[in-house]
Length: 259
Ligand SMILES: C[S@@+](CC[C@H](N)C(=O)[O-])C[C@H]1O[C@@H](n2cnc3c(N)ncnc32)[C@H](O)[C@@H]1O
Image (tube, rainbow, N blue to C red):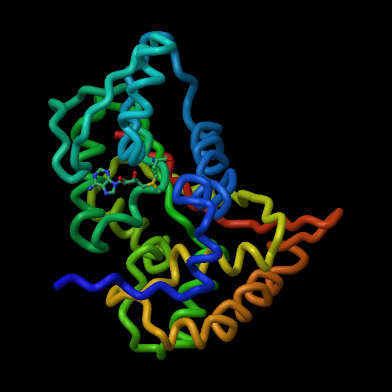
């Protein structure tokens, strides 16, 4: 007999707009800003550059529609970044935007870094990045441990908050790139309504690996009340309040690699 999983009423209210709208509302332009930042650090692309967009996203079917509609010279394929199916030396440039945190630290991240190197042409450049500091995620991780205990299992939807930029640097070192240079950049994204952000962020990413409980419904305000002050802690250089809206800064580490 199957039972319907429990969902706190506050989560149901927060998520009522539906999955596509909620992701857009939660992350705003963050992923686009990060991609722009990564590309701004990449070498110039020519008309004949063969580029690998490694771990390019979940919506490949949507991308494929745009490829056909706009006649882009792009091929889409589901490929594991740890076992790229491309021959050695296939690409002029490889970009890996916000994917390393999805890999197991110390094994998959090293293997993925080796695969990027293997599939690049000799001397070819690659850019990859990972968060150095992302308050939007760390406050959710901290709210989780503050309300459920420091030993509570990691939040599955918050895997980004557990991957450190030191793991990223170590993985690239272990993959023995010939040349690596790191650039840290601040990426600012608007949050219009802090209270709404606290509710949707907790509703989308605060769910424990074992599922929501009635305790979570009772503790909802306790958990979400730490999120706004957590963001405001960065006031001055990581949090700006202006004209009734807010901007929060994440710091991203980009590795400029060369084979
Ligand atoms: C935060 S998203 C970034 C997506 C995209 N790079 C962008 O800039 O919007 C992380 C992506 O990594 C992909 N990913 C996770 N593990 C992967 C793996 N082993 N191989 C390939 N892609 C993977 C996920 O499917 C997801 O689309």
